[in-house]
Image (cartoon, rainbow, N blue to C red; front, top):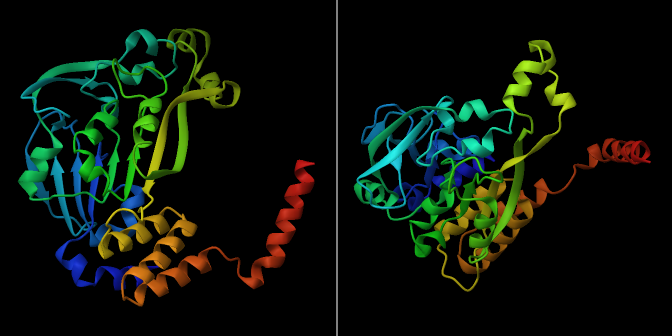
Length: 319
């Protein structure tokens, strides 16, 4: 894979226009899925909970080709001053107020406790794009604590249609007042030619913190994960652009679609992208990409006996 990535990103189209990765709600670390392509890419990372708000900062990075860090609250509007709720657990801080009435029924309600409410200057994606002279995004990941969909919509449908991969973390329970919920994200994305590549449901346990603290000792609390069922609280969604034949996608976008799909282990889609690109662009590299995708979907002959044994054992266990 590394050899193919070097070949792809050594091309002039990527020297002139590297992949643009957006990480809204960055945790101070490289997003796991960005790691294989970080060194070839420009990343714009938003992290509002710095407890001090700054402007866009260009940072030296050993991980990215170029890294812009925006320590600012992000809004879908052109707001000058908006409230920001700094919570006990920093990664739950949001421009939306935590829904304490609903959260009181869940074991981790404490992480949403408000530490401070600030009224601060906000920025929006359009302003940041203009400042950085960037006119498109390739991979858009957002975990903004309740405002994922509105931030995504704020860049406009023209840009959305060209994004290759987008990730959301919408809620299922009412963690914030007026938050963007899972059903709204699913409904909105149906408007576009994206398909849902992955969904992981995360959650909390339905028990009031007072019960947890008053009726259980510290040792007993450690066994909650075994004794108390976890209920859905939010979901991690990954969408991939289908690269519609009706729309005009460039050679660069076909390459990125193959790379991103391969990173996400969607090798069937990657194979289709490479084969379609072969018909559209005179570049033998797409043939190499197609061969790689095929190999990733085949079990090596020398592993087949072990695979069959494992499969038979699995059948026996289930029966």
